[in-house]
Image 1 (tube, rainbow, N blue to C red):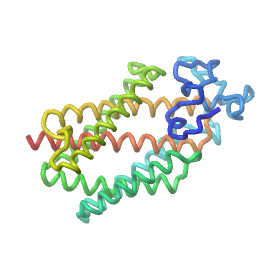
Image 2 (cartoon, rainbow, N blue to C red; image 1 turned 180 degrees about the horizontal axis):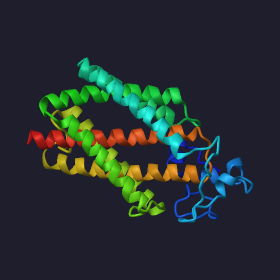
Image 3 (tube, rainbow, N blue to C red; image 1 turned 120 degrees about the horizontal axis):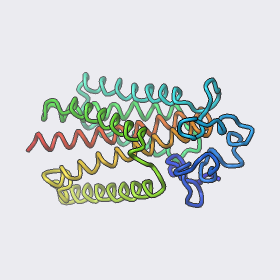
Length: 283
C-alpha cells in the first residue's frame, strides 16, 4: 500500500517504512509501490515485472512493452521539461527580466512544485507550468549574477552537467548504492540543510546583512559544496526511482513524475553552483 504522502511516495517510500525496491531482488517486492499485490502491474501474470536481465538478475520491462514506464519515455519527458526551463530562461535572459519579477516567478514555481508533489497523479500541464516559471527565475538570477561575475552562468551549467554525468556513471557502475540507509541519511541531511538555510534567511530579513553568514565567505563556500553534494545524492535517488519504475512495470504516466523529480534536482544543483561560483569570484 502506498504512503498517503505523495512526496514520500515519489521518492520511493512506502507505508510501514519500506522503500521502493531498495536492496530488493525480483522476489522481494513488498516494499515497492509498483510491486504490491493490489497493483495490476505487479501480478505474476505481468511479463513486465517478471522478465529478468541475464546480466544483473533484476526485473526489466521487455522491448516493445506499451503503457508502462520505459527509459525512452522518461528521457523524452525529461527533455521536454528541461527544454521548457531552458527556453523560458533564455527569454528572461534576452529580455533582461527584472529580478523582482524573477523572485515572484520563484515563489510561483515553489507553489506549483508543492502542488504537484502532493497530487496523487502527475499533471503534465502543471509540471510544464512549473518548468516555465522556474525557467524565468533562473534566467533572471543567472543574468544578474553573470553581470557581476562574468561567466558564472556557463560555469554553473557545465558544473551541473558534470555532476549529472558523474552520478549517472557511478550509479550505473554500482559505485553509489542506493539503499534504505543511504536514503535515510540523504533525507535527514537535506532536512537539516533546508532548515539551516531557512533560519539564515529569516535572520537576514530581520537583522539585515547575510544572516548567519551561511551564504558568503568561507561558510558560504562550505555550504555551497554541501548543497551540490546533496543534489548529487538526490540524483542517485531519482535514478533509483526510474530504475524501479521501469523494472516493475510502472504506468507510463509515472514518467512525468520522474521528469519532474530530475528537473527539481538539476535546478537545485545549478543554483548551488551559481551561488558557489559567485562567492568564489567575489572573493
